[in-house]
Every structure is written in structure tokens, then in C-alpha cells.
Amino acid sequence: MAGGGGVGPGNGKKYPGGMTCNVFWTCVIAGTGGLIFGYDLGISGGVTSMPIFLEKFFPAVYRKEEGITSTNQYCKFNSQILTLFTSSLYLAALVACIFASWTTRKWGRKKSMLLGGFLFLVGAIINAAAQNVAMLIIGRVLLGFGIGFANQSTPIYLSETAPYKWRGALNMIFQMAITIGILVADVANYFFAKLEWGWRLSLGCAAVPALIFIIGSWSLPDTPNSLIERGNHEEARNRLQKFRGKHVDIEEEFNDLVSACEEAKKIKSPWINIFRRKYRPQLTFAVLLPAFQQLTGMNVYMFYAPVLFRTIGFGMSASLMSALITGGVNAASTVVSIATVDKFGRRFLFLEGGIQMIICQIIVSVAIGARFGTSGNPGELPRWYAILVVSAICVYVAGYAWSWGPLCWLVPSEIFPLEIRSAAQSINVSVNMIFTFAIAQVFMYALCHLKFGLFIVFAFFVVIMSIFIYKLFPETKGIPIEEMSEIWKKHPYWKKFVTSEESRKNDGECGKSPANGKSFTNGKDSPKVSTDGIDSLDGKDSVKDKDCELEIRKVKNLDEKDLC
Image 1 (cartoon, rainbow, N blue to C red):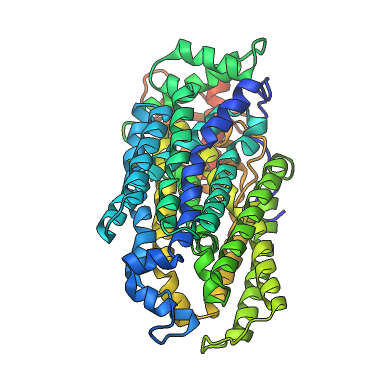
Image 2: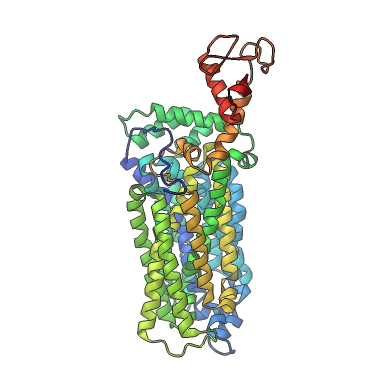
């Protein structure tokens, strides 16, 4: 299959041990870190569509929405201050996840998760008590700090804890928690919108998932990888034994973790090391996957869903109900991903989900364009039209929820080697937050000016990212996390980045005489060509020396004449 689709497992290692109750419940509890992110994604759009909230904090938007000032449907929620309320969180998360790289490595995954939960809790309390826009923004910034720490550390925790055969499914518990958080937020918005202080209750209830995450994180052990990284080898061995099963032989896996840690300790500055040529594949995916995830437009649907549905003519209750329906589809479809990711693989889900989203984006664009045109005045919307739009959006959400949604958290967390894992995950989350902020900030403005064409723009990006996956992404299903580097060596494109640096290193080692450590010269230490074309030193054949000679010839493409 083109693009490395046939690239298989690294070196064929298969560690013993499968799914245990201990590792399953540990991952479920850790995965609740997704609740805080999901709840915030869902709650923002619902609150910003509540008339009482708009009248108190954003009166200009309220007057547009009520028709007091003239505007078309596309532009009624176009306010930079309103979008700043939503998007300020993601700038804060960007800053936080950079610091989280250090805390995750030095303090462990557990403490970073705890810190994220506490910061989110404080932000929820301030938002619920807000008296002005400044308090809202401060609360949002603290929420963002919490999400930055949680999103950086939780996926790493899950990937390091899960057995390699179940890593995909267990890591996707994080995405499952995000979708549950979105669904709970949609339910809260639907019922609280009818109350005078409903917006305070919606914002304040963010404390509930924060408390769940704090209590859960407090009860968790740290991962074996993190314990080894901080020098606690015996505790790490005991923890790995509990995760894999009491009577399972963990020696090979444990020794590989220790070896990986020893290699990681040689790296003094992971932030500089990650830009080395041999890490080019991992860095590329750390940057492009989260960027592409946001360019699908999915988060626009999630945190602006009620506003979007009101923009295309739905009433207040109808818009919240439509958002609730799409939230339910999102959660249910993530279950499909959990059940299939370790069976069909990451590539299949990426590509199938991409095709599904492209088709649905085009349908939504045509439907809105045909009814609203460029004037933004659709008149009365028939029932069949509403059903068509909501159905197309639901199918789109389903495609995202079993592909680009969970996989863009899973894949980066499993492809990074230990020595750059914390730094790389921080880059991954940072890019995610940069693009989330940018799209949240410009969406209403873009909708006002591009109108229904905005959805065609999102479809175009989905085409580009699907081609990217088809050509450049090798399958990572069923490969132990510490053996993941082998897949890049077999990929037709990425192997030139990985093997070339290793070859140069080997060339430097092979080009020295074992006798004196000096480079070969034309003297007595010069290579002699043997009858089989493989050089030896001083006429003595050495297996190691032959390997070195072969390596030199492979790298430099020398023929017999060149060697002579």
C-alpha cells in the first residue's frame, strides 16, 4: 500500500501480559482528565447563546441577536470580545503545556495531572462568581492552565501504562472522557438555560469534573517509565508487575524500559534534541496532527454548536437540543473507535473518517448556501431542512469521533521515544491549543464574511490531511511503545532521515582501528580486500570488522574498485 501502509512491527518483540483489572481501572481513572477539556468545549457555546449571559456581559451581541440592531444571520454573533471569552483559555493552555513538559519529566505524570485538576477547579469557581468580563477572562485563563497540564500528561500516562496490544483502546479513554464531558455540558446547558442564573450554574458545574479528576489522580500510582526516569527502579518493577499480572514474566519489558531510560538520560536538553534529523518523523506528526485536527472544523461545531444552530435559524431550545444530539453522537461514535482501533489500525480509521467528513462538509455547505445564500436571510425554515442539516452534521461528527478526534491524541503519545517524550507531547498540545485559539477567535468573523463557503474551506483541509496520512503515516498498531522507532526505518520516505544519521554514527565508529582507535590510513592498518569482497584488517577476518566494512559500503555506495 502506498505511503508505507505495509510497514509492520519494529523488531517483532511481543511482551507477555494482557489486559488486567488493575491496568484497566487505572486507565479509566486517568482518562477522566478528558472530562475537564470536554466539559469546557461543550459549555462555552451554550453559555454564549444564553440571552441573560449576553445581556449582562456582551450587550452589543445581545442587541444583534434580539434583532434590535440590523444584521444578517451570518454576522449576528460576530464579536471579537465574545470570541476572546471562548478562545482565551487556549492561549493559557499553550503556555501551561510548555511548563508541563518539565513537571511531567521531573515530578512525574501524576503530579502534573493533579496540578491541572486544581487549576481548573479554581478557574471554575471564579467563572461562576464573575461580575464582569475581566473576571470571566481570568477564570478562563486558569481553566486553560489546568487543561494545558492535564492534556500534556494524561495521554502520556495512558500510553505508558497500557499493554502494547491494548494501547490504542486504553488511550482512547481520554477521548471518550472528552466526549462525555461535552455531552454532560450540553445537558447542563439545555436545562440551566431556562433559569435566571443558569449561566452561573453551567460555568460553576465545571468544578464537578475537576474534582473527579483530582480525586482520581490522587489515587493513581505513577507509570513505570516515570518511576525509572526518576531512579525508582524497584518501585517501577513492582508497579509493572501489578499492571501486567502477578505471574507474568516482565523481565524483558522492564529491562527494555531501563535501557530506554538510560539512553534518555544521555539527552541533556530534549527541547534541542527533538530537532535532530533522526526525530524528524516524530516532530512532523507532533506538529501537523494537532494542526490538522483543528482544521477539520470539529471544535467549531462543539464549542459553537448552539450558536451555529441559532445562526442557521433554529430557536433557543431547538439549538441546544441539536447540540445535545450531536454531543450524544460524538460520545457513542468514540466507543466505535475504542472497539476497532486495535483491530483495523490507525491508518484505516484516519482515512475512512476523512472521506466521511469531506462528504458531510460539502452537504452542509450546499444546504446552508441554498437556503441562506449570501444575504443570510432564509425566511422560515421547513422541518425537513432542519433534519437534513442536523443529520449531516451528526454523520460528520461520527466520522471525526472515531478517527481524527481520538487518534490525534493517541498517535503522538505512542510514537515519541522516552528521551523526547515530554517535550514532544508539549509541542503536540501547544500546536493543538494554538490552532484551537486561532480558529475559535476567527470563526465568527470568517462565518460573517465567507458565509457558507467556510465549510468548503474545512472540507479542503480534510482532503489535504487525508492525503498526508495516506502517503506518510506508517501503521503503529500492535508495536511496543519502546520499539516504535523501528517503523520509521522501514518507511519508504522517513527511512532516509532515520537511517542516514545512524549510518553516519556507525561510519564514525567503523572508521577506527580497534587497535589504536585511529582512522584507517594507507599504512598497515589500511583495509585489504578479501576474496569475497569484504575487507579485513591486517588480513585477519573479524565478524565485527566485516559488519563495519559492509556498513561503510552501504552508506557510501563504494564498489570494489573504490575500496581498493
